[in-house]
Length: 105
Image 1 (cartoon, rainbow, N blue to C red):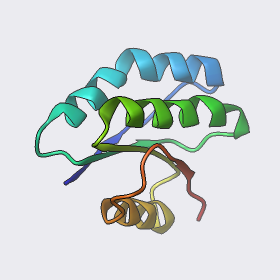
Image 2 (image 1 turned 60 degrees about the vertical axis):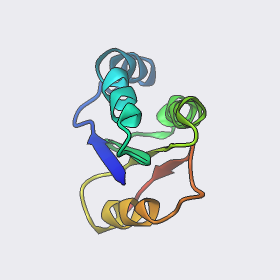
Image 3 (image 1 turned 180 degrees about the vertical axis):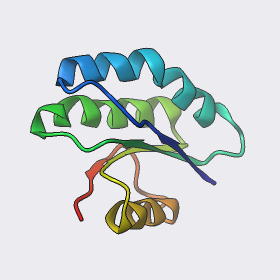
């Protein structure tokens, strides 16, 4: 079963956002992945500009490696149909892990 953790707010700057995620949300993500009923985790982050791409992709890849064979992906976007569609896709995509997927309406 895919679990979802949604992070509502992060600082505007990429370095500060990365630091805040690691300090306040990483352990919750790891705990969800440690649950035997969890086969995948989608971390939902707010939209951000291109400066955030590297840390978000590194988060997705490194967490997926750490959690294997469980899957971990990072989704970014405002609430809406595009983000919901990506989450539905990931729930039924057993081969997709370690990806950063920004969504646009």
